[in-house]
Image (cartoon, rainbow, N blue to C red; front, top):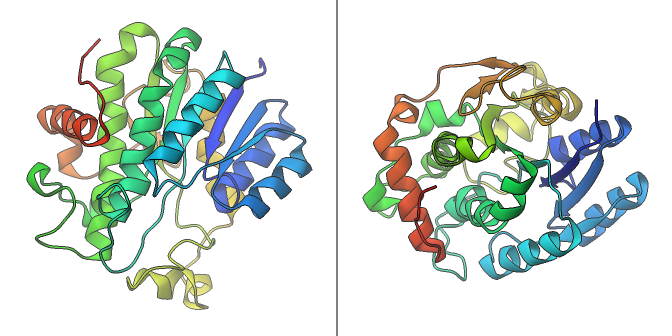
Amino acid sequence: MRNKVVVLTGASDGIGAAAARELAAHGHTVVLVGRSPEKTAALARELKTDHFLADFTKLSDVRALAIALTDAYPRIDVLANNAGGIFGDPARTEDGFEKTLQINHLAPFLLTNLLMDTLVASRASIVNTSSVGARLFGNIDLNDLNNEKKFSPNKAYGDAKLANILFAKELNNRYARAGVSAAAFHPGNVRTNFASNTTSGMRFVYQTPLGRLMGLISPGKGAESLVWLAEGAPGREWVSGEYYEKKKAAKTNPQAGDAGLAAGLWDMSAEMVGLTTAKN
């Protein structure tokens, strides 16, 4: 297996950190992106690799990150859009978007597009960390992406994770002919700091002894699918444009199969973050 350059967001904790350790142990060049200066720097020291800081509630941070990555890495074989989370009451970022939507979808959408020249030149794979929450809670309305009409932490999260799947499908639609592949996956219900900052009932599963009773898996186990997708060859080990659970293509929210919704979400997201909508 050849050494790959893997840019991994949300790398300072949970499955991101576990995947970074595994990929580094396999000889890949892992580029860490995190929000916490302390945690991200500590892991970078441990793995003897580069790290970059970005707060995805600030699209200016995302733009600066894209410039820094482009300057530092002329080749990126894998972009793992892993940063995300579920949060509490509705809150707007400084960019004017609902926090859950921006962190989980708009920020990685912008980062991916700003890196697209490098990703195309590298014939890269793009891996989006999604969730079974897309199926359980997702119901995207393109006229209400900020969930102003029917906000709940679970719906905002489910919509954002469904957006990750639709984004992967539309990436495949727009860039497969240019050699770029994309997939989304559910890592499993992982025992991490996930849901620590939410008013959702999910915090009782993830942040109390109830989680152990419900069989939450370790971050290392949760990272297995991310590592598998990052190391695997699209078209051989996995199929571009698909959604995976336990390393197998899986059914998810029926909206994930709506090609018109995927295209519309792309165009609307591009407009929101200030990108053109030209299609390859």
